[in-house]
Image 1 (tube, helix red, strand yellow):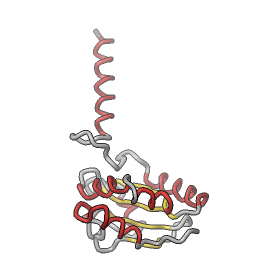
Image 2 (cartoon, rainbow, N blue to C red; image 1 turned 120 degrees about the horizontal axis):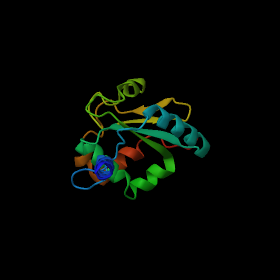
Image 3 (cartoon, rainbow, N blue to C red; image 1 turned 180 degrees about the horizontal axis):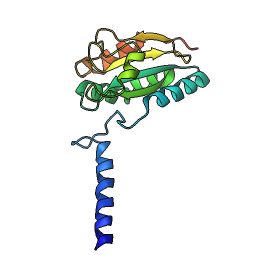
Length: 159
């Protein structure tokens, strides 16, 4: 009986862990709530230096429709091609304004006027661009064309 109960509890916990990375509708959620943002950023800086790219930090949350819309558009061509050519991407989960706020602050608070917030940095950690006025906080209304226009305007010269 104890083995059966232990098995049931193990299966239930695995199901819960799997559900944590997907929404109720079954879509994959863009922000890893358990990620170590500082470690991810450090790894991205190293990778960006090796690949001669910039680092693109996306600050947002899984509950945010605009954050999910931005992520979905970033995964589709032609925007995905542009992103892949220019950037190493790190998505930083801010939860309900209660996670990674030290990271948000360290990068100049690109979420002050809404999420998602965006920072473009060079591999040494210098900020080249930061959203200040919620430039993509309405990503659901910008559509793929508007988001492509936004990303085309960001720093793009190769290092």
